[in-house]
Length: 242
Ligand code: ATP
Image (cartoon, rainbow, N blue to C red; front, side, top):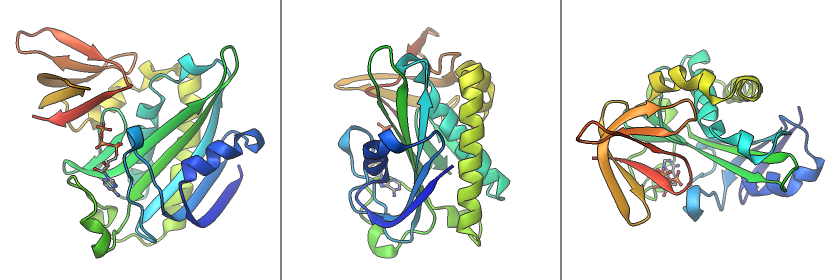
């Protein structure tokens, strides 16, 4: 696949979304610094020069948008496994799209889609992984965060990128063949919140309970006080510790 490296960019996802007409499945855009990195719902993603691994990967699902349900969960597994393959152990997942280290945010995943009814679904999959954040940038992050350097020296960033892209391409291909259900157990094993008391936020609404991993559709399962299980599918849903 093609790899485009741009030292300083607004957002790799934005750049790759605009490039979709000329992209092939698996093409990757890499940057050293984002000046307008984004999270979900327009939130800012801090990606200072040299402190992060920033990439966007293009993928296409011929079956359309509906086939993408659960895809960001698979992206999370792929990133964790790539890190394991490079010797970085102990990274966990937070539903639906974050990587956690010791309960703090190590990386964010932002999947953006476009397409028309009946046509293929175009996906730009963004990953921002903290490697070693410059001191002056650290205070700009308004929630507990982590960096990969806590787990050991990062000796070869290129090898890390190669592992990451390889795992993403293989796992996305398997997701297309087998769907999210095939990844359920693996995801649940990596789930930081599994069994923990949590709050689920949906706009103004807040539901309390105990996280019970995901189901075969990739929905978050929440056990309420009375034992009833409630399901949450993606969208405007956020998970928080209680
Ligand atoms: P949700 O559970 O709704 O996804 P979130 O806080 O994880 O909530 P995202 O949109 O995934 O939200 O990510 C954006 C948030 O991540 C920012 O609001 C900020 O709190 C945090 N953040 C920004 N930059 C970094 C970074 N480099 N490392 C860790 N966390 C960051």
